[in-house]
Length: 404
Ligand SMILES: *Cc1c(COP(=O)(O)O)cnc(C)c1O
Image (cartoon, protein in one colour):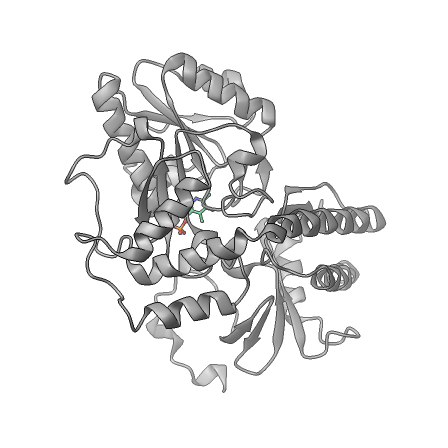
């Protein structure tokens, strides 16, 4: 297949894409239209919790598709009931609303908080979010996000999202007023560059929320479903939110998200929330398959072990090559390159390793969320050997980039 012959311009040009087309995936590996293989440490942006086309998901789709794809969310279906109960029994929440994406789950969380404010807090509607946060690409979730430039991009914004600073409790407290209904944050800012909330900050937010009668909302679209080595990120911190959102990993690659709430916060009335595909059995069957794998006793232990190994190897590489800080929790990690060479590293790892022993016909997929930073979000079942191979590829890449 020749890339130049493909009529790609029919697709809206929303981002600069490399001239490769992926045609197959298996586990931690992708194959492009020329048969070149790539070791994938992006995994659909922390989406493919079980890697590419895992048997559990293929089987779940093959079993559910001929049975029932969707009867409409106006009716019950078995996979949705079952998945909601699995999620409830493994978390601190009592109610679930399924969505098709992380942004939609966060939209739901914002609506739920505003509804709760109307019912219980005199119409309070402001949700304090953090600078550097990412909550999605709908107008409301862009407004909630603390990404530089997003406040003017599709102005006017949705009002009601004052921004505090991560790990600065006083900056949150200073924004609390009678209109405040909640605080929303990612336990680890993912797109913002793997910025970790400290345990003291999370505990402080819980105390502030309790003192001022506010909802604590955790956006766990990236940190949920095993990514941090615990089933949900809040469990790593030992701090229970009132509302949590899931996306990415819960679907293992298919469009599935969830809005979860404690009983007291679950205040939607008929007509408040819905959506054509929400909770459809095909996607929920996949969510069940993912949860089934992640719930196996050895699974989270593996995420912790693989995360510790990745951390050690990145730290050693940093010492050896004079790079900056390595940080993260579980299998959501970042490495500070100290120089703004992230984009070059990404492209050389993908395209330029073919002359390196062991990498003929192979490439490495890495992500650089900010110019001096690399982020690592492999499949949760990535092997120790694949981590070691990635480190070799990264070391070779850095030598090439720095030699230029
Ligand atoms: C990816 C992400 C979202 C948006 O999810 P989509 O499925 O792309 O809408 C929201 N919040 C966080 C923390 C994310 O990482």
